[in-house]
Amino acid sequence: MDLLPARHQGKLTAGQRAGLHAAVVHPRGHLPPSVPVRDLISLVDLGLAEPVARQPAGMHARSPRCLITRQGRERTAHEPRTRLILVPCSSAKSDLPVAEAHEMYRGSYHRAARRAADVLAASPDTHVLVISAKFGLLRAEDRILHYDLRAGQQGTVTGEMLRRQAHYLAVSGAEVTVLAGKAYAALARDVWPALHHPVADSRGIGDHLAFFASLYSPGPHAAPSATG
Image (cartoon, rainbow, N blue to C red; front, top):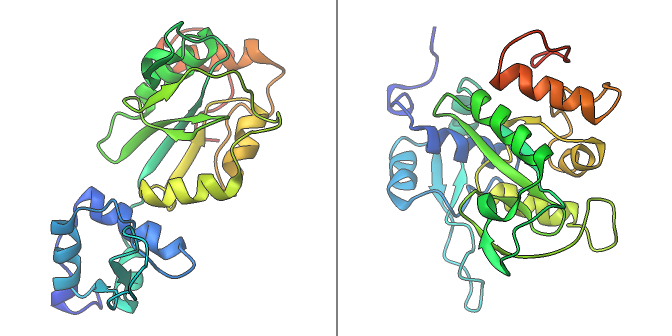
């Protein structure tokens, strides 16, 4: 039996659900500024969010516009979470000085992980992002500079930057699977401590690639479980 008042029971879009889940894990309950205004207005009308009071002069233009309400938290507890698949960047890159992420990364490991991620991301509530040692969370279309840096080296993206990016992209409350090695999984755990890392106990890159292949090219591959 649904105990929420009727005004709180309107159907939510995938973006609204993602925004509410991000607000639940935000220290102050802020909805991500990337949530479209029309979605925020709908959430306010449903009583699931409330506008932030006018900010003092001089506050940053991207200050949060809405907070999740108590009713919003109750509703969110019953809403499915967005799924996020993270794949690593690669040391092998395009010769271009600037390119979109999907063009910049040329490594075989990255491409295999991306193919596997695309299979897992069959539903509209599942997203795929690259986790870059230098730039953090990247969409395929994000334009980036050519660089030479690996996770764990000096200059690697910080956990604080990743948390800010995850909130802005409305994926901080997502269920996360990392298709990458230990260094990139460790980076991601700064944001998602309970993430799923299916290749965590494998013996090396060969096992990783076999697991990825088992997802995009089913066959007699020895691989860890995608859900275990």
